[in-house]
Structure formats: C-alpha cells, structure tokens
Length: 455
RNA sequence: GUGGUUGUAGCUCAGCAGGUUAGAGCGCUGGUUUGUGGCACCAGAGGUCGCCGGUUCGAAUCCGGUCUUCCACCCCA
Image (cartoon, rainbow, N blue to C red):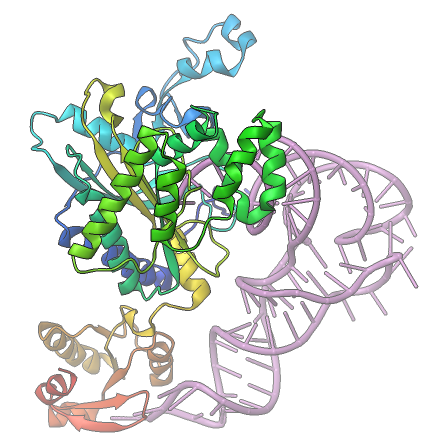
C-alpha cells in the first residue's frame, strides 16, 4: 500500500490558528455592525436545488456553478441519445443539486417560501461560504465567505444610506483608511445610453467604459466600435470621460447632460437624496465617490449600485451590492424591492495582510502555562489550573511529564506570557513560582495574589 | 473556458550547458544547562527533486502528458 500525499481541491484553503484569529477579527467587526443596524442573522443550506440556482447569474454564472452528482445510480436515467447530445442533455439527469453561488438568491428563495411569516421590511444578514468553479487567482477562490446584509420590502432610500454607513463603520474599525465607496445608479446608466442614442445597451456600454482606468479612452473607443456602437454615440459619450472631480460637480453636469432622459434624471435625484440624507445623519461624503461608469453585474440591479475598492493594493473590489426591484419575481413573488450588499472576507483579509493592518494583540492566546516536575506536581497543577480558569484566566497545564526546559519552550513558542512552576518548594509553601517571560522576572505568589496581578 | 507561468527538506530558495553520496538559511530534535524559554555554540534527523511516461550508458536537469501554483483575458467577493 503506497501512502498517498494529501492535497486540497483547487482554489480551497485551510485556515490555521493565526489566520482564524485574524478572520474572526474581521468577521466579528462585520457582525457587530450588522447587528447595530438592526439586521437579523439567517443561514441557508450549502446546497440548493439546481432549479433555484440556474438562470439567475447569466450563462457564465451557470457555468461556474458547482453541481452535485445525484446519489445512488446516478446514470440510471441517462440514455444513449443523451450521451450523444452531450453535457447539456446529461446534466439534468445526473444532477439536481448545486452548491450556492452567492447568498442573495438563496435569500430570495427564503423570502418567497416564508412570505407569510416575515414582517416587512425585513432586514437580514448572512455570513456563509459560497462556491464558484472559477479559475483561481490572487483574491479569487473557489470557496470563499460572503457577508451579506439585505433589506427587502421597502423602496426607501434610507436603505442605501445605511449601506454606506455600515461600510464606513466596518472599514473604520478594521483600520482601513484609504478606500472609496463607489456609488452609481442603474437609472443613470440607462439615461446615459438613451442620451447617446443607444437606448437599452447600457450593459455593453459599461463593460467597455469600465475598463477606462485600465486600458485608456483610445482602447475603449475601439472596443465600442467593435461592439457596433456608432461613431456619433461614442462622440457624444466623450464628455463623460473627462468628467470633473467631485460628487457635486458631476451631479450638476449630469443634470444638464441627461436633461432629455426622464429615467436618467430620476437616477440623479435618487443619488442626490441619499447624499442629502448622509448629511442630515451627521456624516459626510468622505470615502463616497460617485462613479458614473460603475456598472457591476447588471443582471438584476435596478437602482443604486455599490462597489468598494481599497487603494494601492492588488486586490479587486472587496464589497459590492445594489438595489434590485424584483428579485423574488422569478420565484413567484412580485413587488418586493430590496437593497443588499456583501463584504468579501477573504479579500478583506488579503487586503489587510498586504497593508500589514492586523493588530498583534488580537491573537486569542493562553495567558498562563503551568509546569511541574513529577506526578505530585501534576496533581497540584490540576488544582491551580481549575483555580485560574474559575477566575476567567485562559490557562493550560503541560500534558506530559517533561524536562522543564521543554515546557518553557512550549510556552515560548505559543507566546504564553506567564509560566507557573510547581516544584517541592512551592508545594510546601502552598504557593506558586511565576515567571513573566517577556521580562524574565520571577516571583513567588499565592494563587490569589497571582490572579489579582493578572486582573 | 482561452493563453502563459510555477513545482527541489516543515518553510524560503540555490543547484539545471545531463555525469560520483542533491545543498544553504530558517525551523525541528538532542546536547552545553538532570528547577527555567528567548541569545550563543556543538551535534543530528529530514528529500522516490509534484506525478506518470519517453529520450539516454546515465535525468532534479532534455521531451510529452497530467495535477498544482501564480498571472493576463473573461467575469467577479
């Protein structure tokens, strides 16, 4: 029997103790914020029926879904003809479940299934892994966590405001100071395509314009021509390209630029109201950046669109979201408007790692290691251990009878700040020798005195 | 899905015009110190050179395939 080398599936990772401590720091920050804003937690299964998932993310999305092979005789319904036709005919007969691709669609499914129990507006948050059969890259994994917060059942622009506020709070608490919350409105994009005489093509338009920073205006024009946009339309677009800095200046310009598009003006109006509310709330527009060419997955967004980008790092967006007017429609429940957004924990982790922002002290570490020389010391140590833990001090007793040097090395490696030494002298006195490793100072104390010292 | 890239000790990497027993630093184990960690010194363990196949008298080194890593495109958290 040859021993096989263990390995992980492509695009997945283990998280060791250090990584988990850091991930928890991020997760706790996000969770805290969601709760502070009145969101309630929800979890849904890792797998959904394939019928729930397919068709919600576009053709590319369907390709990226992980499908689960049926249990048992999964080939029993497959005919020779199916095999000849190919994958599209075989797939529905061998797989009826898939791993969730995001948290929004399962949430929509939940809302529809529980519409009678839910009182609207419904604010929920959800922190769970999702899976995508994408090709992995930096900041792109096949299994990653999303932290979603959505509000459904209200058209109020207060929701948009709260999203901005939550992002600001989370980033402030994580120590991220150089980032922008890009915000746009799908209606503005619709207006844009109307005004340049290419109504209904905002999707294509944005895919091209979105690359402006990357490839430049010249290349974008070429791409637009390739996509059969008219020369005239491209010409009319050029004022958008060299738009002035500043949210207010952009808004003023667009009011005249989009004057002929009712829907475009409506988008401007919504955005202005959100910014106005931000001021009334007592906050300001710091970090908030109106980005006219921000597009995102246009599949289901109908109003505001968000994306958060941290500056000077090699990772893409760390958060995104927007308003969708009829997400539950495909599941037979119309008229439920919602806004939601998502933090990508894994990307936030990579960003913070790259910027060196993880605080040293958030490691969840043991405070005290108890060392001893013999069986008698071990028994005495157990009592001390109990005493320390009852006082709420994270403590460990070295499990094996080993040289004291080895026990110290263990404490050092694990960065445990205090070592208690129990020998005959200490037991006779009913006290403890306590050494603080950072200073090397050692003193003899009673358990009570030691606990006092630590508090 | 398309194109490219990477893979040698636990980790970071050297070695590669094909040629005796594959190296370093860090880490690990033990010792100098049988009641004291970090520092120093000494000693030691650890590799089917990603995997499969081919060329060759001979392959870590050349060729093909495969898996993996990272990158660009696409898309996205």
